[in-house]
Length: 485
Image (cartoon, rainbow, N blue to C red):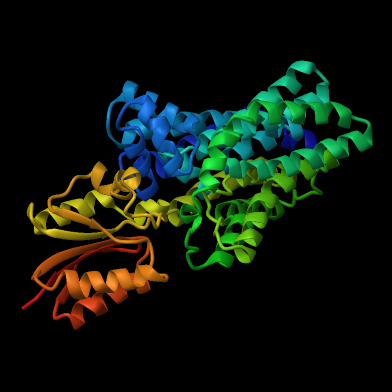
């Protein structure tokens, strides 16, 4: 089959890709729109459940900039209370991002690469999670995609308006996630390569735009400084399987399946050909955007105490990974291969994506279990898993109780520390063995920290004469009942 014949039906690619995107959104995104808040989302709900001024004040405890909580507060005002209302901004941002990534694929390679890039983005698990997450990451991805497209157009067309757009979108991105600043490494490498080729704007002009980004983003440093001043909230626990997570980010299963299917079908028809190279700078930009965020956060989580290697923090890689997949599949495959690729990506994603944290912590269900076994006077020991150790700080009390602020429970809630390190271990031991000496029954609710923390409390209680019984269990959420015979 000739090259002209294999590209003779661009409309078919367009409609097939559109159908695949609709299927991916319907299967991977929308079913979770009404699901229970997971732990961090309940924190968002707590931040915005009062006035706008209070939301801005509370933002310093929640790790996100005030800009996002302004958006969330407005969404709640417009769409009402509940999970869907707080997730709508992310859903809208994610849908717009699909279109921008399509345009980015077209700008860097060609139309077919852009179409497959949009499908690839829709099926990537970290992006699918962010798309219906009441957190700022989908909005940050939107601004990253917009800033990257602006940079590419600026380098290609040398029009000032694209340089201004790059600075504005880049600065906006930083107001929604500080972690996305890693993308600037890829941007700088691309700008340097274009300058070496003498095919884009000068490094001096790029440096001016970076200066503009710094100025525009400077106010966000106030919140960042306040956040870094609270060292206890940076004590994230690294979940097991960190190497597997790195591999899944570098070789996402749905994209690999799509690539293999496209190559196999194209080869079976004896139409496999050498991939169209495209500009080396285009490949450089897509590759570095895909690789740098997860790689650097992986290394940081190895060498320093705070554990930043979490999919929501490196989800910025999705833009580059999607475009890279689009280039590979579009360049290697004929039309049948491209159709097989997008079909396999959606099907494999549907079977491998489990909803992320939403499948491991259903706080709405847990609250129903608690209410079924507790009355107003029941003591509930509660450790939600939020990484603040200052449980006696009244300003943070609402945040630390956030899951049960969103889904109220009967009983008297007593907060437990984040972990059993140092004096916290003695505090919990004394609580269970001494302060509960005259209590015959209580409930223990633990989130995220489900390893030695929960086991130690059960051990303390059993030595004090209590018998434990699990009432509700998920990977990162347990409700345990204790009775003294």
